Length: 376
Ligand code: SF4
Ligand code: SF4
Picture 1: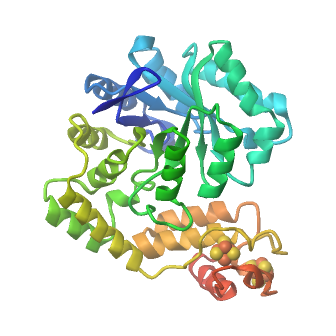
Picture 2 (picture 1 turned 30 degrees about the vertical axis):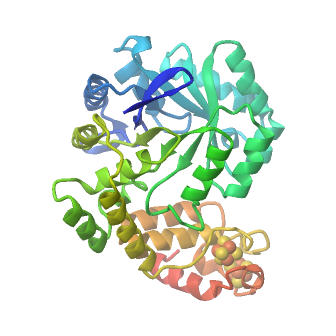
Picture 3 (picture 1 turned 120 degrees about the vertical axis):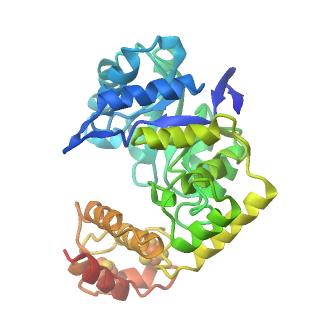
């Protein structure tokens, strides 16, 4: 199913170029040959939207080789993103990311350009570097067609950003059935705010980083009973695509099998039926009932932590393990969380975090558990 955005039909499935296939035995090398085959099959099925970013290592180069050098420019649309936080001390360097993206991709222009990953910690930087104005300059110069921003924060912040920047044309949000009512990701509430501001939404993480392709067994059983022939990933992508105001749903496909599965149910996309919605509600109830750390990710606790421990990120990593049983992903998320600050085991139990936590969490006890599970 297609819908008109900016006067053009946008098919409901987009190709996220963040998790491209790798060459066997070389996890750092993108398999351009397989990517090219995926591009061909994606386009042949009538889809057109490709999404990359300056910070996705090797992705813009792969987009050039597998897409731009092989396919007439008018046959596809290409999105990329400017990550001001990558060069936080130098406005010109941050802005030069756009030229680098054009050099890497050789696309000539971008159909969609996004401020990458806006959240409360970095929104001031995008303001200070005048990136919002820069987007309009690029658009006036014909170097980009449309611009928006990807977003990872709460509905209040999204409302503020869209109110301050009404010329942003669309928003990219994390929407999936597991995070639908989440007090940290706010899928449903953020989608509602985008709707209120009249902005189309590009969905990211519909399969929650791949976790909903292999959900907890009880969830898988519910979905399998409702439709034995469908993949778990199909439920996640169709759930996202069934919401109002969705421009397209990005799927970060990593091999031909995933691509073909996605095409099988998105080529003739049908929104979820009432029975299917009921199955998703049951799945959501099961997910909500799995014991986890009830941290809302509000970050009130981090500012005053003398050990600079990224408490909510560490808890999110542990929850990935508790809810989805994804031990390895949780460990990787934990490693990222402690890269620039203290580890869970660095907590000196000063109690500052607990005195400000609106959820009244026993933060130090949860951190002890994380330290036990993750080590340093
Ligand atoms: S108790 Fe631990 S985590 Fe909390 S503020 Fe103190 S050092 Fe940081
Ligand atoms: S203040 Fe409490 S709820 Fe908020 S991020 Fe910290 S631990 Fe989580």
